[in-house]
Image (cartoon, rainbow, N blue to C red; front, side, top):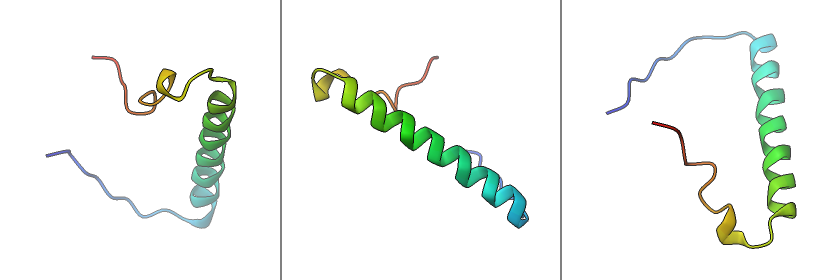
Length: 50
């Protein structure tokens, strides 16, 4: 099971996290638009180095 940690945060931290999440989403949209085939990028968000 994953080690899950929970911390309270204020509105400023929430805005920062939302901004970062929006950046990741925008980047994913660009990658998807540039890919020749869906299969080329289907698991890119789930793949991580050792």
